[in-house]
Length: 306
Ligand code: NAP
Image 1 (tube, helix red, strand yellow):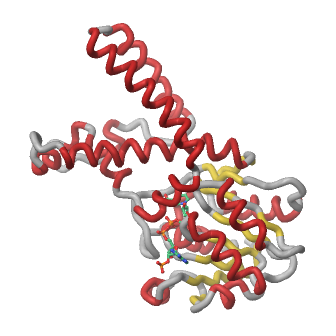
Image 2: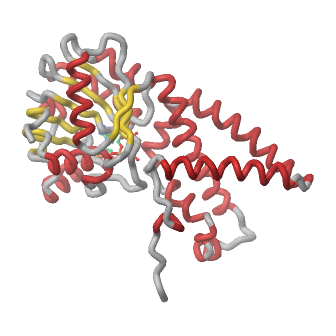
Image 3: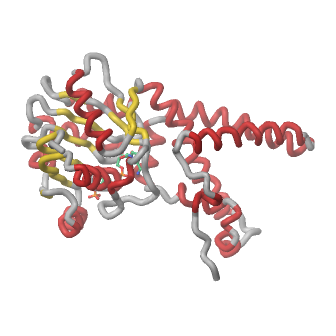
């Protein structure tokens, strides 16, 4: 396949950037991929494992001559990184980011983007609880949604070219405005993460059930919370601090529903509980029908035989 971009710069070399590199390499989608990360440690690991065609020490070197620049750093530092690279961006280049929140990133990054450079925010709805340069794999984006959040006046050719790359990396794409994006993600990702963090925190606080019991009997449901609650603390701190309004709105609704369920349990209202759980089960069926998870029992985990 003819490369879609001649030179792609990846700023930050964690889960998302490393997966992007392996996916682009799999498809021969970029002439050259240049990467950089904040720490010498990460840059060394990247060189050792062959992540990117070239690893450079500064963001300025990384973006030099790049026709696509991807910001793959935590949401809270996107603005600072944009400011740093701005004077070095090539005219006509596209800058995108993969941040999990869109309004805050747009507000932080857009003011630094020079005239003649296209800024097209985006967000891959794909991830794992692992982070760092070793955690990426080419298949991460296969059949996952990658949302594009273009702004008024976005160059159509630049948008189509970016979309072509994302789809060639295996993802399905959709366009959304930033406000709607942040609300949808508060429901589907941000609030669930906060609830998982809370549940794991509660188990840790509860002294009547020992830590070893929590771990030993975790297959009863708890371990699925622990996977989500093992996600990167910096990334998730930044997500909550920058998607405040939407997350608080969803958490407000969540608290109301939780109180309603609490009441149903106290008053013995089995009908309420049954109806509620029937409705939620249908959502799970919808996710499977949309090809976004497996129907295999226990999420397709293979049970180890003793
Ligand atoms: P990650 O694995 O934790 O990697 C983050 C990278 O950013 C590292 O290379 C790190 O450099 C660099 N970095 C951290 N702080 C920095 C700073 N102050 N200045 C410059 N570079 C800095 O992260 P990730 O999971 O790939 O996430 C990257 C972005 O993708 C985030 O904005 C996140 O919201 C978004 N996202 C994540 C997921 C997910 O599930 N993980 C899914 C969709 C979108 P060092 O290694 O040198 O510290």
